[in-house]
Length: 173
Image (cartoon, rainbow, N blue to C red; front, side, top):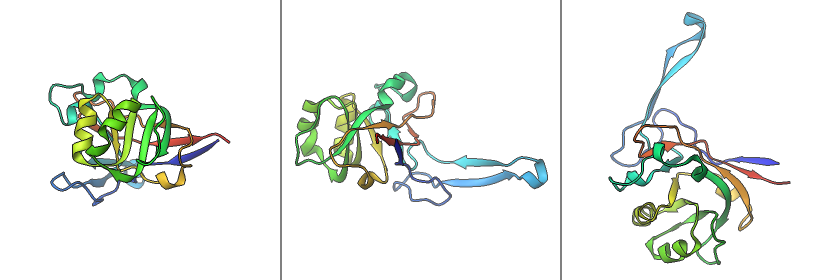
């Protein structure tokens, strides 16, 4: 078994989407002064590698705490818009894909989609009940069009429109 980390490291002043709040990670307590270390995080629900709830772009749709955990993991593949897509698995794209791929994606009935998605495509996928993942890294280290197990569990945020995740891919030997 091999585990590939697909998550960006969260740190102060990391890049954020234009208009989103800046990320701040600050030291509150130190081991030297308090006998433990504690940091304070200031970030948005869409910081770094994150999952989007249906409510992110649609007010009346489900928030993260209303979506079953089973929706945030499962079989997945790194694919492209140039090959037939396997049905009912997670699909990740290294290159940007746009709204032109919507019909093809809907026919594949993916459990989730991630990678470089245009805003219009992301909005359409969320409307269609398909979870999206953004700002994944290391997708190029995964075998193309081969199955792996993906985990991208969100924090349980009440009315959460999104959440940073520790996304991983587990490859079989």
